[in-house]
Image 1 (cartoon, one colour):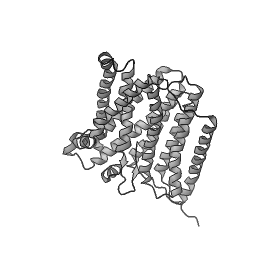
Image 2 (cartoon, one colour):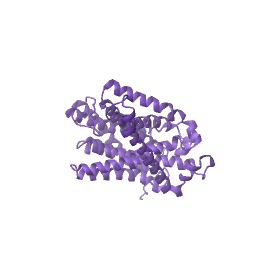
Image 3 (cartoon, helix red, strand yellow):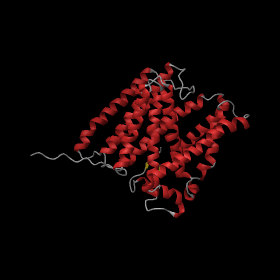
Image 4 (cartoon, helix red, strand yellow):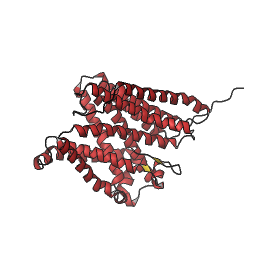
Length: 371
């Protein structure tokens, strides 16, 4: 007698459209842009156009998306006062001190390279844990194996990028010289073998989890997309040029973040427009999804237009005694990046029931969803 195969639950975070956009759409967009840039590796204009589109449509937008959580209503402003006042000053002072002591931008670019690797990996881990609360209970072995490869593969990737720079120290990252940690070939191979064996073991566990009725489709696909993006970004595209690999991972990260913040805001105001947060609650309704993104993009254009004007024209002309050359641009843009990394490390920790509700993980064990 033939028994039917066990069903595989989808385990949506929200629903078909949202989850397909998050899991398949973001990865497909990033890989598609990477393929387009790779097909014209010597066309600087194409790469520059793709880079600027990412910066303005996704990168800057995802910074503004964070601020919808910090200051778009009085309740959020009260809760996040330090992140809006004290922390920016601390971050900017830290960058100024670093520039003054080091005498160049290399150290800031280096910090950015390695910090963003950790930041991107943490966001991916956080999303995987949200999905983990939607799938059937996993064995301790499978949970530990999944968490291990989430970190192991990107770690191998950043070591690979560092090793390439060791071989060619004159290469640049986003137009700037940088330093890299020394990575000998044996260490790179060891980490690669460990990450590769763990990944193969994770893949081999999929049919067993299916038979044990512990396999959920979307959480599994998400981990696969994570592995593919980091291998593609740091190895497949990264060996051609670090900027190209960074662009692929950056597009994936930014687009995911924008969707997750929208999910948070939409769940927060799922009962309709809240008079205490009228503007944000209005645009966060699902029927106004297009308006939400248009408003965020408009704010992005105005905000970063002012930032660019300040960094390019105001600061160098009126405050030249503090920082010279392009230091003001570094201070402003990297200040925003570093501030974003620190803030995200705190605001996405699922410790309060209210936050867990807005992420759709109510009454589950606590986990850090640091992005």
